[in-house]
Structure formats: structure tokens, C-alpha cells
Image (cartoon, rainbow, N blue to C red):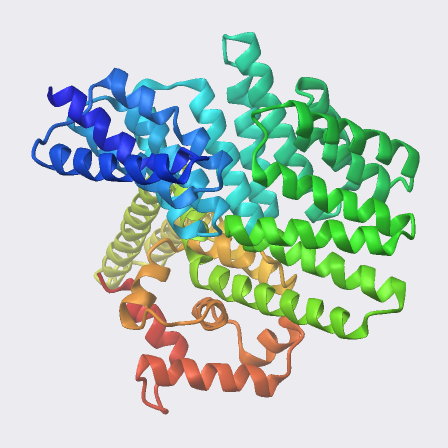
Length: 515
């Protein structure tokens, strides 16, 4: 009875999946649902692994209807039940599902958090297909946060795991998904040839709406081949009509490409109609990124048509509002993936770096102590003959020279990372901030302990100051005015509550070094 009532409870959660054609039937079923809900509330218990798998499979039906929030709630409940049953696989897959759903809703912070949980679960069971899914989803999140190279790196890891999948059909499906996502990031990074190649690989693995539509878009936008573009659009349209598994999101992607085709073919009215249909679907699904891009292209269509000035301005305004909202949200969470990237690299370098640092300091202390002892011995031999003094001095110089060579070698090794940072600073490289956190892993945490509202610009400026770069040099390296650097430096000093006469660089070094 307990198992039955658990099934009832999940049925109630998904009751909206049923579309009633008869209003009387609908009313009766709603009353029945309420009664079943009351009964199910009287009994408590967790679902078995087989029930969890069965309920997990209903997620797709919710996706198909665009009910992402209901799908999230279902899978969060499944995670809880799976943990109670120690069903690691069930918890891992549901964590991935929640991460994917949050990504679709534009909530990258929660998506990344659940991907971390999925990775932790999968470490114990090591399912290649799930690893491929997780790393693909990480790539999608990084891509949306403009961390494009990190996105591509994760897609490569996803591809490696997909190739390890034993089941041929599942392997081909996973590879198609990876290549399809790769195509998007390569396009964003400006490598159009790589984007086209990835799209073709995706289509060769699985001919679905997404892969066919992306090929259509490539031919329309980048090869200016409307005939082939139309051909792949027709393939997509046929799949939309015949494939019962098509989701509303896939329809949005198709309408986007269709609008592009009509625009290039100068059929502006049809282009606008396609975009407007896509916008309505994107709104229903709460997918702001797709809505933003559709408004952007709608604006371009109105502009090319040289009509509908009011509608054109409305489309531009909508695009700007959504884009600004997304940018602001992304700025708030950009530190999360950056910290994850740094953490992954630190896991490789941290242990060796600490050992090397300790050995280096110990050897340096030995050298200094040996030099001190030698100097003291020399002072005690003042009454020894000149010849003996010369011999002692010669021996001392040989020892010091040898120790200095050793010290020089040690300093050269210790300073390799520092010199690397200086060069990145001079080049105004975007990798400077990431590399700095690798070399000084405690810096960011200790700065945020003082003031968690530090901006990225202030943190990067702190890093420059920490390694001894002057304001004038910072201005030169970053192509900004000296006044701008001084203003940022003044703001930083205020947030750190440092007295005007105190040396900022020395203060930072003492603070970071103090455990």
C-alpha cells in the first residue's frame, strides 16, 4: 500500500501532463486527484530504485510540455529518495537532470551546483554516459558565461567519455549531443570552420531537428547557400511533423533558422512571423537566451525591410532589456566557474608547489646559517698569520660562491611563476587573473573575507599591486588612464580601510602571508 501511495503522490505531481478534452471529465478527475493527494499525505516513505527510475523517465514528458519547474521539483524529490535508498545512480542522474533544467531556465549558478553534485556521485559508479552528459552541460554553462575556451575543453572531455560508452546506439547519441553543443561554442569563438565541421559530425551521428537546423543555419549564414539551407530546413520540418519526441525548444531552434532563411531570401514578412512564433514559445518556456536572440534577429529583419520603424524599435528595446538582465545575472555568478577552474588546476599543482616551497625555504635557511657560521669563524681568527687568513678567506669565498649558486638556482625556480605573472600582466592577458590565483591560491578567499563585494576589476588591481606593479605600469599594460587606475586604487584602499600613509603593496603582502 505504501508503494502504491508513493506512485499516487508522483502521479499528482504530474497531473498537469494529462490533457482533458471533456470539461466534466476534467472536473471529476480534479476531485479524484484531490482525494488521492489527501490519502497519500497520510502515509510517508521513499520510492524504491525501480520506482525512481520509472519516475525519472517521466521527466521527458514534462520537458516536452515546457514544464521545467515541475520537472525540477520531481527530480529534487527523486534525489532525496535515492539518497535515502543509497541509490547512487538514481541520485546522480537526477542531479544532472536538475542541472540541465536550470541551465534551460538561465539559472547557471544552480546548474553548476547540481553538476558538481552529479560529478561527486558519479565518482563512485563511473558511468561513461553520465560523465559525457555532465561535461557537455558544464561546457554549455561556460559557453553562456562567455568562458568559451573552458567550454570547448569540457566538450573534449565529454567526447572522450562518450567514446567509452559500450552501447553503440547510446554512444552515437551522446556524441551527436556533444558535437551539436561544440558547434555553438566554436561559432561564438569565431572559428566558423570548426563550427561547421562539428555540426556535420552531429548530423552524421543523429539526424534530428537540432543537428539539421544547425546545418541549415550554417549554409544560410556562413556559406550563403540558400538552396542547401532550405533543404536542411525541410528535413527539420519533416522531423517536427513526424517525430513525437520533438520538444518546444527544438521548435524554437527551427523557427529561428526559418526566420534567418526568409530574411536572406528577402521575404521579410515571413521572417518576422517565424521570429514572433519563436518568441512566444521562448516566453512560454522561460528561455531568455533564445528570446533575446530572436528579438535581435527580428530587429534586423525590420531594419532590412526598411518598414515598421515602431516595431523595429520595440524589438531592439526588448533585446536590450533581456540582454542587460542576462549580463547582470552572469556578472553575479562569474566567480563560481572561475573558482571551479582554478580549483581543478590547483588539484594538479598545489601539492607539488607546497613541497617545493618548503624545501626551498629550508635550503635557504641552511645556506644563510652556514654563511653566518663561516663569518663567525673568520672573526675568531684575527691573530692567525696572514697566510692562514688568506686560506680561510679563500675557503669561505668558495663556500659562499657555492651557496650563492645554489641560492640562485633555487630563486630561479621559485620565481618562474612570478616571472610568468609579470609577463601576462605586461601582455594584458585575460589569463593573468586565473594564473595569479593558481600561484597564490589563498589570495581571493582572504580578500573576500575582508569585503565580499569587491569587483573583479578591484581584485585584479589588487593582484597587480601585490606583485609590485606600479600604477603607471598598470595603466600602460591595461591601456587605461593613470587617473582611472588611481581612482580604482583609492576605492580599493577605502574598502580595505587602509590609512593614506600606509604602503598598499606592503600591507597586502603582510595580510596575505599572515595565516
